[in-house]
Image (tube, rainbow, N blue to C red):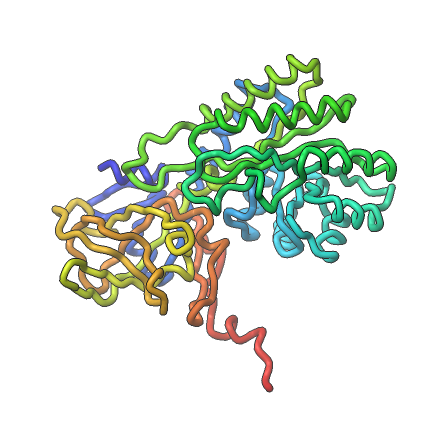
Length: 430
């Protein structure tokens, strides 16, 4: 069954029911209710090992992995990053607080942000090891707050002005008109400012976009970054991050997807050759994956409610949707699914699955053929680990779902389901 290849590594069909990490998914839904998100520890660990092994093979020991927390971050995931010695990328004071709750060490915290607030910067200077500076004004603000006793390092975010092919325009971040980073000319001004103000500049960063499947278009951006490094004249150890963005397959039609090894090899060879041509010291290379580390590890589970038959469409309505997964509404994202029980039953009619929210765009997927469903049945949506929960909302008063981590037949609750009391916590009377 090709669809099963989208699910976590440990997913199996046993007695016609879906299991993950030795746990029966239907029993998990009975115990923890739905919508429910489950993560498989083996799949998470396997993905990070793929990155580490590939970097060791193609680049060497002067390389490391930074987890892009925007994909999904909670205290347990922050703790998981430290078990693997990862740097954790945080955007702003909120994600930084989660990192601290997960006991992430200062030297393992990197802070991003296109328009960091005063509190963001103060928190970053106090708790982070690296700030990736997005613009000249931010650099001026850092200079006013910075203490020479700090162990903080600064990297500059380059806007390469190069486009990569992604699923949607909203996931492209390195093109010429992007809001992110600094142009070549702005970077040179930032370098001079750092020299004049004795700021600890030791790295360059860029990020081209998200969910691409070919590393080749990143090479012009790498070349530009290395040109800047040459002009800066970095001496000794310096750092370079071409960001992340490596994609995953969301639908069986996208299988097989190019491997993590293919991506790492392409980046590593470009950096090594580029430095050789420029007689540059090899930098410490940082890759910054999010989706490709965590997406496949996550599965969303929903319960079927009403079923509506229209002239040319059958709608299966479930108890989750755009409040926990806005990707269809935002990007037209395409997914697959399986029934949790009766998995191998003959496929019936073509259906579309939508959520309970007051938006026509509240759709999970359209025109999928699967076994006939009835009220109370469960469906499992694979590749739900990234950019679902991190972009979830309380639209229509939705309560954010419970999240489990599965390993060796055991399920651990890592985020509680929100309650009505949680929804009302911030509210005050007139």
